[in-house]
Image 1: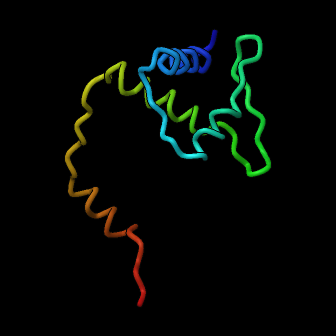
Image 2: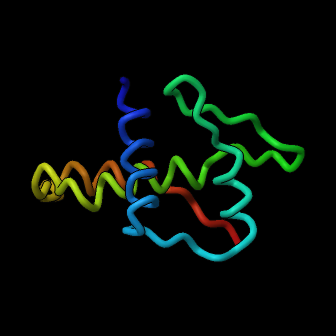
Length: 96
């Protein structure tokens, strides 16, 4: 089982156990219904409107990020004088 299948199975388990409620809109429902399980793998064929299971993929990744915790905080490095000079050289010019 690869990582995508693992996260997909976790999402389906949350739905089956009533630990996740999906929004009631038609778009999400239609997008979720495009995703099928075939011999243990999640497959999705795009429909005529171009929908292709993005809601399912986004929810499985978000669920993992929210429940598994993070690797820690990553403080931003301090801005140096060189960073300031580079910003002044490379910043977009606004004409008007």
